[in-house]
Image: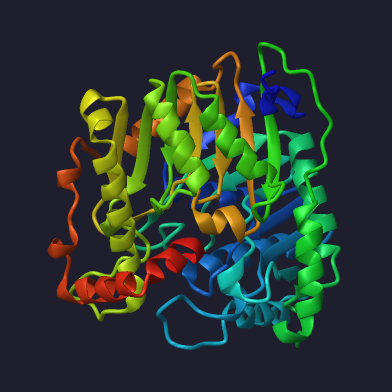
Length: 445
């Protein structure tokens, strides 16, 4: 007997399509976010991998603090990853990290704001806080973007993401409730503005317990009737491979696809189970569109004229994986059943994630759909069930905007081989493959 669809049993909030908005650029997103913060009436809850000590990060934090000074009763909470807050950017010089900025701001203002560090694992390489979603008053502002110059296009470069706004009090309440119960209500979660905090080593036993509780957590919600004038939205959360509802949703969306599938990921390194379902979808005739960043648009890419660092080998490793996939599925590329698009726009980078299936289901998520997201990080997503295709026009406009800077790959030979790479990258990859380190890298990066 066939198993019932996951999507039939999932509770969902009923949302009118007029309350669902999509922004199309990082600048538009930054301006919207700042305006929402400045005009907030009741609450501001920000959850991000990091709030960076740079111009854009300071602009956001200043706006939040000034909103609090104007309206002391505003309920304001900021949550960031515990590890990421205590270091600088990868490849940058050693520094005190973003936590120093948080303390600086706390000393400058009368009305205080808590900025919590959330430790998902005792080491960053084994898991971080990767939840997305800002709640301001009764709206959810959902994007994969963190808060710094490049994500918010503060200067001449941007990191392209997806930007969705859902105005719905019950959805906003549900996401706030999760933050209150599973983050700021936990003893292991510490406020960086309160002076010194314990070392990660001292917190290790508590972090282990915390991760276990996260693996059993979910967003609180009751099912609402979704009529033909509304869409259903379900917030999902997951951590680890076992009983991960978000992972299950991704797999089943692909497995149940009948006509068309759009898949966005910045790093082409699909978990085995996802790769299997994508292949099955292609073989049963589902028109499959995969949108990834060109290696030059990868956020780890280092131009050849700049100082070489080992982390710069990752974009080339992802291209090798993509080329192998394109070669194995070349007949579907030729027939048009499979389409691969490479996004590239000047020196900007690509950070899009998510699924759109049969134009009636979409997953908005920060999940990179790679082994790290699958097993290590704390991830979430918003499942949109649009049985009457009320949001089709909005999603078509969004993907039209995405495709503006893409190039279709019609043959795997269009993708570079290792012989085409800079000599330093060739040497690095030779060592990586010789010791089979690529297997580990693909799991944790």
